[in-house]
Structure formats: C-alpha cells, structure tokens
Amino acid sequence: KHRASGMLGHTSLWIASFTAEIPYIILVSLLYSIGKVMQYFILYPLRILQMYCDNIYFALIFIFLTCFPPVFFVTSGVFQFQGDFAAFWGFFTFNVAIHSYFGQAFICVVKDLPTAGALQGAIVGTNIFFSGFIVRPQFLNGFARIGWYFSFGHYVYESIIANSLNDDSPRIRAEFPSAFLNFLIEEDPKCTTDMVVCDGSFAQFVDFSFGGEYTTQNNGRNIGILILYLVAARMLQWFALKKFNYVNT
Image 1 (cartoon, one colour):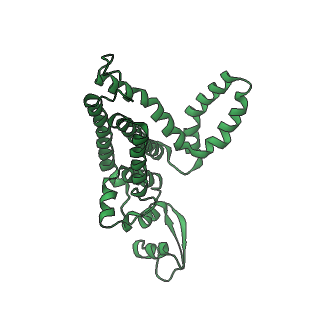
Image 2: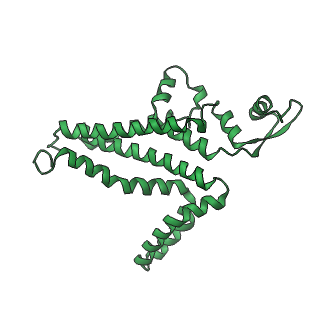
Image 3: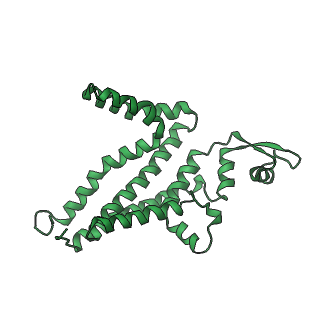
C-alpha cells in the first residue's frame, strides 16, 4: 500500500523490515538457547514481582538476559562456554532469522495472511521432518534424501548437535545388549568383544546416532549454506515488494 501510494519505495520497506526484525531474532534465539530453566526459575517469580513494581521487573529482566546465559552454561557442565554455547546460539539464530525473513517474504509474495501462513507452515514442517530430528539421516533414502539436502533445518540441527555434544570424555555407558555397545566394539579399540559394558563419549554417540553424517567438520559448509538461504529470503522479499502491488489487502 505504501509503495502504491508513493509514500515509500520498495527498497526502503525492504531495509526497514530487515532492521526491525534483528532485535526480535536475537532475543528469541537467546531465550530458546537458555531454555526452560530460565522460564521456571526466573521468569515466573519475576512475573509476581511485576504486579508490584514494573520498573524493577524490567530492570531485572534485562540483567538476567545479559548475565544468566553465560553463568548457566559455564556452571552446568553441559557445554564449554567459549565455543559450544557460541555455536549453539549462533546456529539457532540462523534458524530464527531464516524462518522470520521467509515469513516476511511470503507476506509480500501472496495477497492474504492465511496463504502466507500456510506457506510458512509448510517451510516449518518440511524443515522439522528433514532435519534428522524425526527420521535420522542414515534412514532417509531416495526422494527423502533430496529433501534432507535442501532443508536448511538439517544444517541447523546438525551444527547444534555436533557442536553441543562434541565432548570426547567417556561419559555414556553402553551395556549388553545394545546397538551402541556393538558400535563401540567396532570403532573404539578400548572396547573388546568380550566386554558387556563399555563407556563411550558424547561425540561417539552422535556418530552412532546419526550414521556419521553430523560432525563439526561440516561447520564451514553449514554456515555458507545458511547464509545463502538467508540471502534468498531477503531477495525474495525485495523482488515481491518491487513487482507486486496488493493494494486490496
């Protein structure tokens, strides 16, 4: 409408929509990265405080958003903060950004919100199914394999799993009979055929669970592909703003 009336150019709207989305993307990815721990132990008590003093509430929210994530990931022992949390947050930010900007593009490509919502739902569903979360990549064959290669959710999920669980210390116990124990006997010299119990690492379990497909060695490739998807989403919106005039919506 703004472009059709001559109030704003398509490039101005394109830049504005890109810039306005950045704070949302960063905040949402951060909140998801620290997960339910923050929700139950911090946000719920703060909501009670909000009933009495809004200023203190918002000040504490800001403090916790900036201080809690590094403290949690350093002390939890799940991640090595310097590299793994940065990778986790970075790749999840890619995920939020690509979904958000494709959503903007679809709103500009079609006339009505229900159709745009359906397209966005198809993107979300496709990326969940072909990410490797529901069906492991080693079991995706034929046409499904093509979907796995073209799903940006695959590259996000691979990078999050591979970087978050790359600890080489033996912390997962495999007992007979288990497929993981058989894997360790074949791949790890310290596990022999006469053993009924053997300890494996997170990295070995990821290798076993995903058929050797998910590894930190693919980080560079994954970042490049995700950048291409991000650029494609932005270019699609720019093209739609330039070519389409949906003044009846």
